[in-house]
Length: 342
Ligand SMILES: [Zn+2]
Image 1 (cartoon, rainbow, N blue to C red):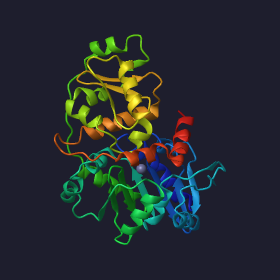
Image 2 (image 1 turned 180 degrees about the vertical axis):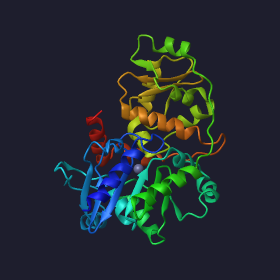
Image 3 (image 1 turned 90 degrees about the horizontal axis):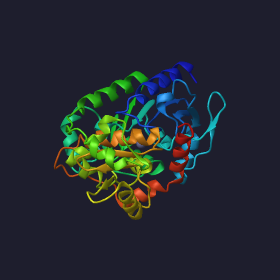
């Protein structure tokens, strides 16, 4: 393995990993192909820490072919250059089926905002004109998604918009892939709705003596103070990591409810203890023990939703897909790894 290539990939990974508009918690992954080996991020590792932590694994291409043929998502462990045994990213096969040497997969806020609109593909067509891009209908992450992308790979797209999921860009070296990522982000800049300021007095009364606190990040409140965002958020799951980290939909506190009552009502419906509650028109409260990973996903959700235009129909993940994501063994492993450090 040319150390230089891996160093470039590591630097690129740390850069994109520290941008919350691209990568949240352990989401997103990068890879580089070297002869018969795919160097890919380990599952659950945070790209933001790529410069400090050895997180790239050499996976033989033959192993990936075998997993794909067997449609088996349970990859064995591989060792990093420092000898740490880890499981490769759940999206390893996605990286392998694309021919370009460097692959970047991110949960880009701008992309997801388009990829969650019922008319997203049509809306993107003029914006991405001139790029070799493909729209990939929602497919369960991992091996099923890789098989779906394989069908598209002969067209050799450089940009894949994953419906209700995110973005993949491909390039023949790190610089080309990163430049393309920047180009797509620039083209999808768009605009977002602004929201009114939170009603901190009301929030304070609600959280008083409870296990909840007022959300620390000021921007989080927009999800509840903007009525359109609040309605979209409670509608369901827009992208996989939303349900995995935050539950199937946002929980809303009704005017007559205490926070505990709202949380109980949500739990009875979804069999998931909510980590945040939207107090419509007032702001957001979070569980005191909410970890950084969940917090990053909450901010991602807010930034995605504020970019979806008012009255534009939203596509939510079907309930069976949400259930599949939330019970997924590979996903549980990834979350456990992400939590271990947080
Ligand atoms: Zn993903």
